Amino acid sequence: MTDPKNFLTQIIEDDLTARRCELVVTRFPPEPNGYLHIGHAKSITLNFGLAKTYGGRCHLRFDDTNPAKEEQEFVDSIKNDVRWLGFDWGPYEFYASDYFEKLYEWAVLLIKKGLAYVDSQTSEEIRVNRGTPTEPGKESPYRNRSVEENLKLFEEMRQGLHPEGAMVLRARIDMAHPNFHMRDPVLYRIKFAHHHRTGDRWCLYPMYDFAHGQSDAIEGITHSICTLEFEVHRPLYDWFLEALELPHRPRQYEFARLNLTYTVMSKRKLRELVEQGHVDGWDDPRMPTISGMRRRGYPPEGIVNFCQDIGVSKVESVLDIAHLQFHVREYLNKTALRRMAVLDPVKLVIINYPEGKHELLEAENNPEDPDAGSRWIPFGRELWVEREDYRENPPKGWFRLAPGYEVRLKHAYYVVVQNAVYDDSGNLVEIQATYDPASRGGWTQDGRKIKGTIHWVAVHDCGEAVVHEYDHLFTVPDPEAHEDDAEPKTYLDFINPHSLRVIQGVRVEPSLRDALPGQRFQFLRKGYYVVDTRYTTAGKPVFNSTVGLKDSWEKLEKKLAGGAV
Ligand code: ATP
Ligand code: MG
Image 1 (cartoon, rainbow, N blue to C red):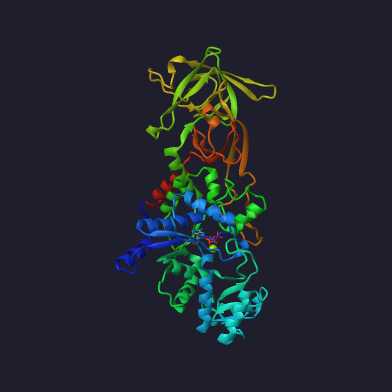
Image 2: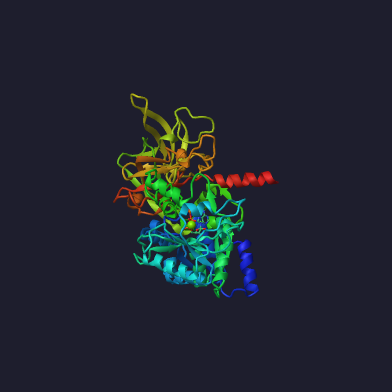
């Protein structure tokens, strides 16, 4: 799999040609404070993909510098998700917390060089004195503490002799710098918190900026690729490497984050959705998390193909979720076994089919894949068909069931509707039809044209299932766009109350009774479905709707292409 050309491949190729680097080393640096989402999949595909393309390697590094929000559960889920997407970091699993001792030494070095100081201002004073975009900041009264005093205080901070908030360690750069991040940024703060790896060993923790570039340098990262919001941090990233005179100099490059319609992507918001019970956990099939998409039935190949197809850009944009679904559908079309399932069953009785007779008919498993073979499906006098496939008074162009209409039962026979039976309230309870025994397998030699084909399941031998039919989690394409409106609304005001519809009493062909959690199928004429891993019980599968059959993205693409000509 070769990555498409983009500005990053250009930079890397130039670096290799000019021998600025021998081996390409990238990293994916998640903070273990939540589950990975599709935006992370973009970063993973990019970092692992570039390493692979250029014969290098990609590290998995947990950016675990903030003990309050980080947990082992998230570390485990992140590893699981990266592996599931098909990427392997081999022995290169690292934690920023492994470098705490080294980072501390480096902080001491900066103090000795007069490039860092302990500031005893309150966090509020620090904030106020940072200035504004048009005004320079004010230097702290503690900025000119002696090296000895700084060393002593910093050591005391480590010993736990000062309470949280009493003091911080700051870089001594320039309080008038046009870039806020260069106005004496905080390097360390006191936190009496338990860390998921270092336990209670530390009570002061480095800030992201002080940890990230140095971690890159320690690991020999050559191309440190991150999202655009870190562009303004780059001068600081370089400043630390320079000030510490580190022999290896990684370079940071930024690209635009991935955003998708009908969803939110920040971990904070995803956590809110989970904690407020709007969804059923991080892996709810409506979530844009990798684990949610897995439960939804998205194949990793579909996700990775999407991430490669959209390329890498420097411009923020919101991509149509239909584009992702297009890649999911494309992959499933080639791989998912075809099955028949009737979601809203009504009985079809074939009145000229012998009572008590059953037969088995052969059905191909996937017309797109000759190796998928075929299966045998039971057929009898009574079948379940879809209620919506019958019309007493059909509109023009109707090719399904209606009085006097002839249709093909997929893989079986032609039938002609003779009669329909209703209950006292006018509900359809049974359709009666006759079949043509000469049409076995779904065709005849007389060449007569049958326009409509419908799916069905035999009453005497079928399974019962539950279907979870999903829709977008939000009612509008950009739920975060309304936060500046006159009447501010939050993304939570746009939660789709109909994003999950539970359908009981679904009838499925017998082979689906024992379908395994995680197996993906195409239900003929209905869409793609996956066996749910949480709610499925023995003999009673629960299917999650993955994506429909309709190709709205492809249509849109064609329209756009057409419009451009
Ligand atoms: P969030 O903003 O959702 O909380 P984050 O940036 O805090 O995400 P990290 O765990 O720090 O999450 O991210 C790990 C890596 O994934 C970073 O390099 C980050 O730039 C990248 N990343 C995060 N979100 C996206 C996105 N939407 N598109 C592309 N890359 C992303
Ligand atoms: Mg982050």
